[in-house]
Image 1 (cartoon, rainbow, N blue to C red):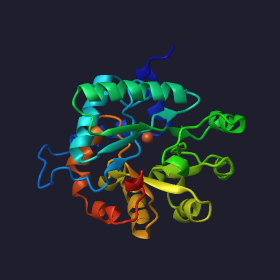
Image 2 (cartoon, rainbow, N blue to C red):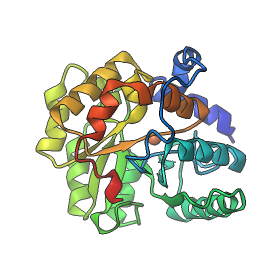
Image 3 (cartoon, rainbow, N blue to C red):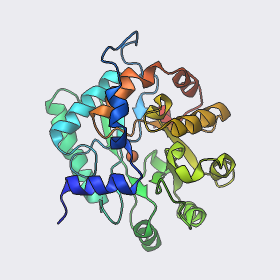
Image 4 (cartoon, rainbow, N blue to C red):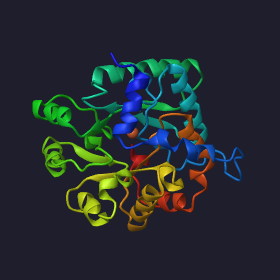
Length: 275
Ligand SMILES: [Fe+2]
């Protein structure tokens, strides 16, 4: 049995580095908060993408980590978190039952810790793989958010475009789901192909969710560039923290909230407040 740390390491490699590869970036984050107002993300209010649920993926490993992250997101101004653990056939075979059990555990711990003023809910971040295709074909329950709008958050490999991307999108829609592509700015296979990326939203009806830390260049300069282009074009529907660990929340608090593009992003007709 592979350890959770080992799986996380492999996951990072598979996904082309990912958040942990930017440790160098987070070390450059200054320790001074600067002239940032209290609760700078209160206007957004709802975060719909994070990995706070304990022990399910490469996010919070323990309940204590979950509570640390919850405190940080609360201080940033969020009053509701829809937490979205990875679901991936090879590594994170999370089920709706397991995810809901972790949610109950965290809700209870948050109430005991005096953090009950943040509403906690769950969905999932589905990796587009064969496992998802099989679940879809079998009509197995997939976790969504947004009530009857049935928003389904999904991601793909960062490096390779899935051969069946459009087919799966169509099948999700045919099954009554509204696909939401997590962090479209992070897929390197779309770099230099902005029109192809945009076609997913404009022609195939996929909603786009940007990661807040992309605005600070946390993941890469290229991801920041694509995020800014999407914001300039108004092709952003939802915004998430994708918080896995305290380096993410530190970057949010110390870098992202100071970016010029954050104001531009928050001026778009985002769906977050409606969740
Ligand atoms: Fe994520």
